[in-house]
Length: 453
Image (tube, rainbow, N blue to C red):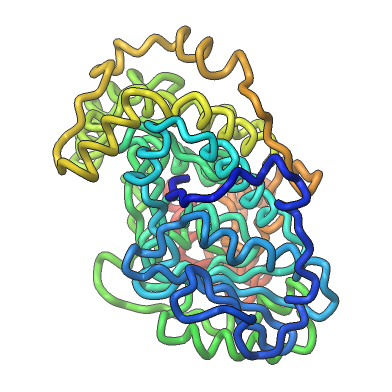
């Protein structure tokens, strides 16, 4: 999670300021809220029972800053309490939802020991938990670049709509950080070791892969998003089942070539599970080298360019996160941020990548030089202050919205075990009956079947 800071007084410690009431905004008419103009970092629009947030820094790829969060977070809190607000939409202007944040500016505040950093980090993580536990349905349009903090905004909602333009990644290991914003809850709950692979490499996946991996719940062509938004706005019932079925009506294949096919399956998926199942980064790298396939060697080469400390943090976090609740994961990530943000590798990573456009010089420079024992002692054993506080007291350990996505591989395998005499067709028909008209069910089930042959 990376975003810029602005000149403002620390406010998170002042709880009333953070949770200030905006009950009146829930009753705004279709016009823009008072004082909003086209340059606002987040545009708020109210249309009957629906509420709309558009992240609005297109020249910066909607990089999150505090003005943006201040522009939309109070509305989310008010809409949750409003009987008039039934459905919330989140999208980005321009080329994507959000690319993350302005790390160069963020680093500048850290280097200047600005005390506002902690307040803003705290508000960020509390905001992500609020979205993850929001009591109103949220439809996130993952249309275009969705990375870092943008990934956190998207993956925490119940309905996550990918398009042919979607590019998703958590690339923090490239700048001396670690994947965060609750991804250590969601990534380890993806099929097999997909989440470990994405966390350690920061690999960018596109539209269909985002759907089949389970990051998105639906796939809809980008030119259909306006019609989908209009159709959802006209619903009489805004229960999750109705919203899910309505989005499925707009889902269809969008053939644009090889970059829009399901690529993380077959031999590639077997390599991911075989190589990324290990408990140490050194073992993962060794396994990739032994595999020797083009995919494995590319993944290994990527890892070897990342911060060794960050790579080990990424692996440790997904292993821990698999056993933790959503609030505990965010609390862990916030705590790690407080410890890592002044590290050499974060400074070096941002300076080299963003300013100098060169390969960073990591310290330590090799995986084997990063002591696991010391890493655990320094970063996990002693909590930092302040601890994370949240507006909702919710700490679920199972994603409550998983049923909107394609079926998990574990569920498919359990069904195959329960019905060993079933044919491939019977297995597919079973899951198509469970999720009628769901794009991708047949391909997902058949991919799991074929890996068992």
